[in-house]
Length: 324
Image 1 (spheres, rainbow, N blue to C red):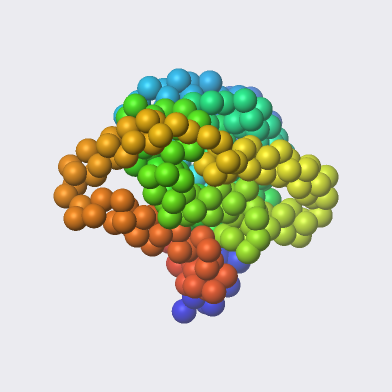
Image 2 (cartoon, rainbow, N blue to C red):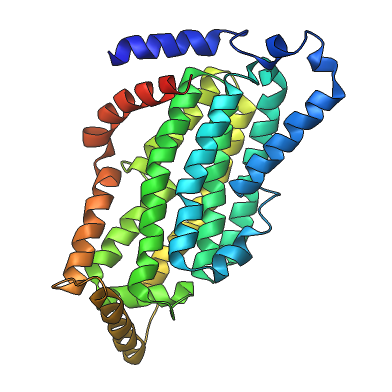
């Protein structure tokens, strides 16, 4: 079933005239300035919602001051919905504009990665750091979408799935730290309060930076393969270079968790805050249950190739085909 769906999806993506905006209006729409302005403003709206540069200016301040539940929803699930809507429009109504939209999507993707790197390297506030790090992943997904191929669509889908898990795990750590812990330096208490959680958080950081054999490496590798398939060697080399500084700022977070010092008073205070927060949801053993639940979500990142990849390929074929 999934093989036939993939073949049908491939035929749709290769069809230049499939439900395009050209057939809806007129053959001269490519020369219509009003049509181009409409498309331009539509995609500005999308870039604004997914915090793609340079339309990300609102996100660090809003996310930094918002409650954890709200910013988690905006940072993860809302972006997933917007990306699926973008996919729907790019491969149906706007498919005939792919030669023009492809460099635009890739350009904004590279800008998002660059602004994300510049912001994350110097950022000290946890929520704002998560915003800048997510901008880098948004950039990779835009680069995959810009290819306009089945492999590019597959890379975007896999990236979205892993992005949902890793982003949720990042915001989940804030719940353990408590509302009064808002800086990267506060992560150093994890090795005292819950070292298992600190280890799993380290695995998440390595995955997001693209270290093999974790899931983050393979989803980025899929993006590189989609670019190479279309002979976009300059874009391939550019994204490859941009992964190096991204690895640096994730490595800085891991260094804070394990090697930066924290006072005993700070550690005890964080433990008390964590216990108070966890009491609200009636865990029997707060620290251990938190680590166990965290480990379940970390499992797909560590064993992505052996457990997740094949089922995700089957799910991808059905989900993408259902959009048409």
